[in-house]
Image (cartoon, rainbow, N blue to C red):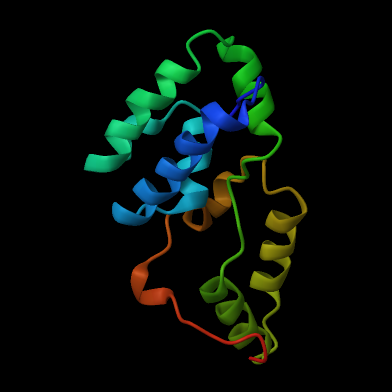
Length: 137
């Protein structure tokens, strides 16, 4: 969040409210944090997240935008490998096609960089592509 002067008492509610808002509005975490980092947040909508953004902008009003962005760029990746991506790579590899394995490896080696050719992997997860598994899976 770029809170360079983090204060537990002050920021605990801010963070708790954010996590609740993301869940309630069903917003992809990785996508949200990356968009917040790059100031592209206007295309992420949700009733509770919009209320949270007002609280957040009030909180960071005395911190330089450059410092916030520099801090956030170090910890908010654009890409996070997800189960459906890995499953697709496994299925292709089983057919002796390792191109997706190599592509995902390239992304994983630098998830903070722009990979224009892999832009589809930076999009929010499709709810239809998620599944629950146990630790033993």
